[in-house]
Structures are given as structure tokens and as C-alpha cells.
Amino acid sequence: MPSCSLERRLPHSPEQIFDLVIDVEHYQEFLPLDFSARVMRRQPGQIQARQSLRIGPMSLSFESTATYRRPDWIRIESISGPFSRFLIAWDFIRMERGSLVRIQVECSTHSAPLSALLAPWMETFTNGLVSAFEKRAQAVYSANPGQ
Image 1 (spheres, rainbow, N blue to C red):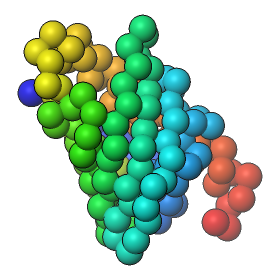
Image 2 (cartoon, helix red, strand yellow; image 1 turned 180 degrees about the vertical axis):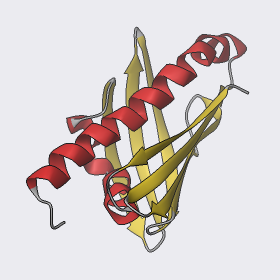
Image 3 (cartoon, rainbow, N blue to C red; image 1 turned 30 degrees about the vertical axis):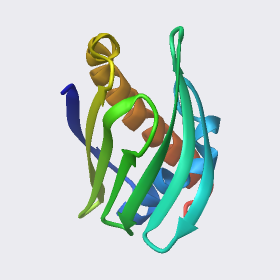
Image 4 (cartoon, rainbow, N blue to C red; image 1 turned 45 degrees about the horizontal axis):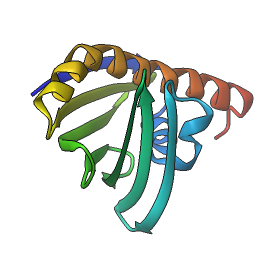
């Protein structure tokens, strides 16, 4: 199963980064790819959403469940669509100045050819995802330092 993980130190608190990652309604404003998300149900510790993204000529739509414990972690998993397994696991660790953000992305589909096409994309996707949240945090929290 294709997977990728990385760590990045950010000058923002775990609460700040967590709040950006859990705010799926605003993903389309700053995430790379042609991406959209619509929350279908929200309850304590869990969000269900309908998501779609475009990777080159491919358009992928799926439903996902995000389980979380603020400000420590978020686990986003697909529950329908082309994926047999799609997981984005975020961990936010408090540091003296900011936080350490860890992310693990795993992806496999019901189609072996599609999985083979997605495998080389995983590292680019993971790096782009973290970079997008890093830029978003800089924009949001530099404009509003008290948040």
C-alpha cells in the first residue's frame, strides 16, 4: 500500500494547526488540487464529509470520517468511493516554540492500475498538503496573532 509520512516544526500552537486541519469547509480556499469538501454530519469527536479532488485528468469523489481529539490528533479515513484504504493521520505535538506536526498518508484503491498511478503521487501530495497548511497558518495567524 502506498504511504508517505513526514514531520515539520511550525511556529504555531497545536491548537492553531488543529483548528485549520479540522476546518474542512475552507479547504478549497487554499489546498492544492481542485478540491472541495462538504460536511454531512458533525458530532463531538467526529465529522463526516463528502470530498472530491482532481489529480490531473482523474476526478475522485468519496465520503470520509474524521475522528479527532483536540488539539492532539485527527484521523481522516475514507468510507466510500474508489479507495479500499485512504488514511490521513495528523499528530500535533507541543514544542517550546510552536509545534511538531506529524502526518502519515496511506492510500490504496479497489483498482490495481489506479493504485499504481497514485503511488508516485503520494510524496508530492503529502508535502503539498503540509505546505498548504503551513502557508494557511502563516496567513491566518500573522494577520490575527491572538487567535
